[in-house]
Image (cartoon, rainbow, N blue to C red):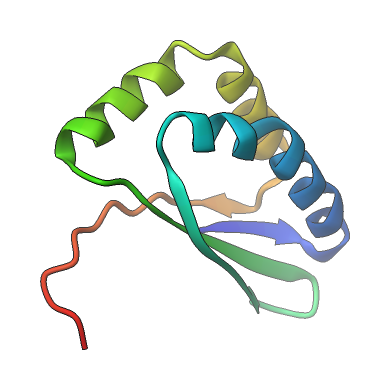
Length: 96
């Protein structure tokens, strides 16, 4: 989850599409959905749900991301704009 000021959301999403998403897809990440929720009149929370095929692929993706300077630049830019940022790693245990 990334919480951004309302006036930063459109630009951040454009940068995410340009700088982060293409390489994430090449690293084996599969985007399932992006949602947004208004936290206040001035802030929006964005949630990106990604899927990776397995635990070995997860660690391979993490190693590739750590070696990619574009990833570091993207998150530095994000941290300069974000009000809050939190990553959650979860494993599905049951389908509804």
